[in-house]
Image 1 (cartoon, one colour):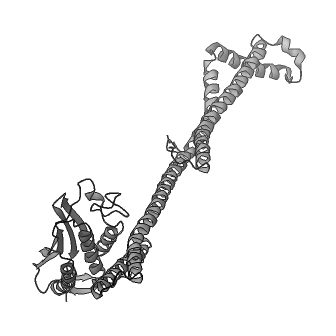
Image 2 (spheres, one colour; image 1 turned 180 degrees about the horizontal axis):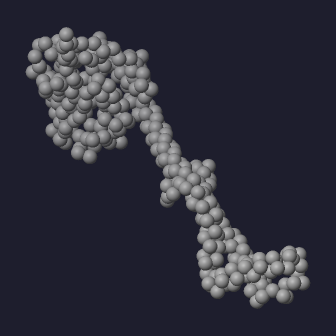
Image 3 (cartoon, one colour; image 1 turned 30 degrees about the vertical axis):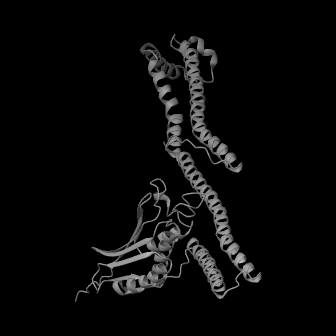
Length: 395
């Protein structure tokens, strides 16, 4: 009940209850008392006419009045009692109503005070229970919603801080490995270990490859910072599916063959199919997925199959490898930020940010990405991009 309604009800009760009780009390006066009053009033008027005396000023004539006049003190006492009872009832009713209103206001305010003290102490793990539908209850509900949002915000901040710590740890580990290798090979060159042109060439190539790994990692970190602030520099254009993926995978194929990984590309999309995409960012998606596959390929002869299919309003790209595979528990989490399936970093769980970047780019293109995998057999990454379709303009 709204506070305004409570006040209106209280006002009406305070005014009308005493009047009602007084009326009931008057009606309870016996008919004999009413008859006596009428008889008294008539005799009084007649006495005043006969004697020409104002009875209100001549109290000595009161003893000469008929018996009805002798009832005046009793009637006055009765009316006084009614007045006193009405005042008492009025006071009692007002106290009850004030207690009712005070309770309805004080109880939720006490809850709010307790809640604000908890928040001031940094405790958000509580609940403000609300009963009723008045203005104070509405305020309590709003306060509870605010508490929930603060709790969610605090939890998100804690998660973000934890992710930031994991990012620093991951980046430190990933940078340390190639730096250690580069230092080792440089020391080998300085110490004269690379004493033949073949060794020197191999050492230099290894240093170059490790430097490329570091550069790729730094680029990923820089791009991730743009993702985190929603400042990815997209440049969308119409892209022919066949031509784009053929050029893209031709470049990828050369790199994979140099690493001894078998590569197969098949395009099942018509020549005129187009998509609206940022060519550079889609290339980043493909590079991250393939790099992830290569990293966790295992010791077996590697193979990567890429298929581009037409699936209605979308173009679907499938990238399949024969690597170690991903367990069913880890599979739903591989696109989460900083997720690693194994702390030892030897299972297919991604670099920690690579696949989260892939997911963000695909979703920003209005597409979707998912994966299927079997341990010991390999993994298939799927992503879809919407086709470009010209909408005819009516005349």
